[in-house]
Image (cartoon, rainbow, N blue to C red):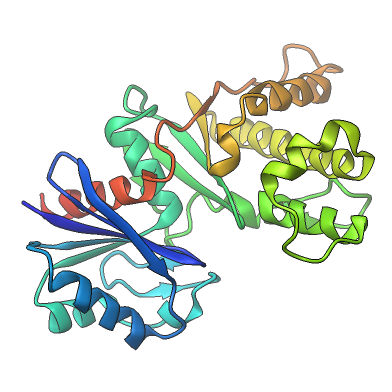
Amino acid sequence: MNLLAIDIGGSAVKYAVSDENGTLRNPGAFPTPDQLELFLTQLEELLSHLSCEGIAISSPGTVNCTTGEVTGISAVPWLHHHPLKELFLERFHLPASFENDANCAALSELWKGNASDVKDCYVVVLGTGIGGAMIKDGKLHHGAHNQAGEIGLLHCCVEGDTPQVWSHYSTIHTVRRAEREAGLVEGTLDGRALFDEASHNPIYQTHVNRFYEALASGVLDIQQLYDPERILIGGGISSRRELIPEVYQRIEHMTASHPGVFLIPDLRICQFGKEANLIGAIAHFLEERL
């Protein structure tokens, strides 16, 4: 069986053809359009050159897997409030599956990655915002309103007494705040430069420290609340070797005054990088067909 896997992001739509084992081939991408009809037209063109028996979609926002309807907040608002499963079937005459992008990342790890050997796991994805997904008893847990695991919406206070949601300390938001304080034009600084240059730039170092403090606080809270066997961290920033040691350093500081009281998480990096959402979308499609 050939399936077309699609990962809809805020700036680009990634795709690949996959077999039932999640082996990806013929990968590609195109800029995220600003209208649903343009998106469908581009998929139509793509499918005209492929022989596929289904479409597996990784989507931002809160996703109703039964209907494909997207709600909540996302970087792609034109996706919202459409019965996408029905629409795709009518347009392409192919079955389609839809799942939240962070959930897809978790499904890829559950299927073939660093969550395949545990029953209870939590996946944190760092990017434009902070996404989360909960694996419970070896299965993805959606919750009563399809929002289980949305850790980025939890409030934290790492900047004075002003409450902030955790997503305000995502990689991209951290970069933008550092840009503003340094007086740089928006878009001239990226995450790699921010973290690479932090050791000799006091402004950058302040924002990198806040990023790590928020991350350490978040994963420590997850561990106390859910008590998973493992917490995985994904997203582009997870490729940095110092990420896990920096987080553990801050967890040690946070828990030092109460030794033996707090559960210390088993933190690891997600196995799959940029392909995680595509592989997870395939896993979800196959699971729906069982």
